[in-house]
Amino acid sequence: MTAVLETLRRLRLLPLIVIDDPAKADPLARALVAGGLPCAEIAFRTAGAAEALRRIAAEHPDVLVGAGTVLTAAQAAEARAAGARFVVSPGLGPRVVEYCQAHDLPVVPGVATPSEIGAALDLGLTVLKFFPAEPMGGLSYLKAVAAPFGSVEFIPTGGIATANVHAYLAFRPVLACGGSWMATKAWIDAGDFDRIRLEAQQAMRLAHPPAAGS
Image 1 (cartoon, one colour):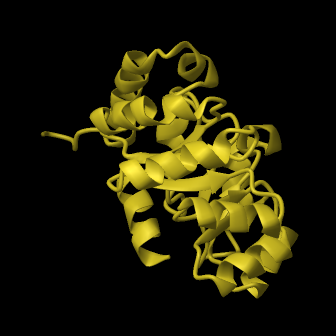
Image 2 (cartoon, rainbow, N blue to C red):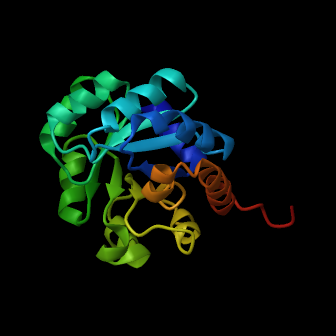
Image 3 (spheres, rainbow, N blue to C red):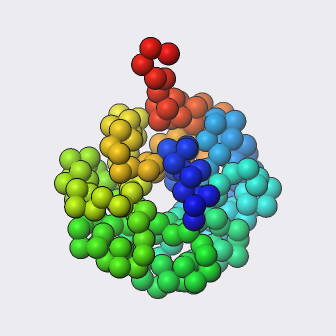
């Protein structure tokens, strides 16, 4: 878990990737690497997701690749077999968490309320996905619910984009932000990987602004 979290803490961004055609996995990975963002959360929403993840894991060991939208322990097992280095789920599913913990697979489940954060702590988790961030009330809501849980770090996702990512990242408990704006499904489908490279570069500039006076 530590190595995965340290990479995410350094990158500060977690691209959510929805991909239909596994043949596009290689150029997608190359575009993200060229853009300075060697990381991808492959959403298990499509028939080609597991194969796309497998190809990135096998062909691009420099890319931190994991599985997102994991709803069941069976999907977590499929992701692990494909080479996922972490698992993200939209909600707090104990069976998914227990499977991942039993197999030393880092897992970041989604939470939206203090009760869910407390339940996650009971499962031994201290890094959680805050979802859906903007519909739940955005950064002000996250600050309110995070206040009693000083040991917890969050990866907000859901409505995060260029206009608000810097504000989220400025909040100390935010480890990284997730989003799809730098590699949209439409661009992947169209094979517009140069645009993905450019958007990844821009996203990294937003996430890592130069220090004052530099």
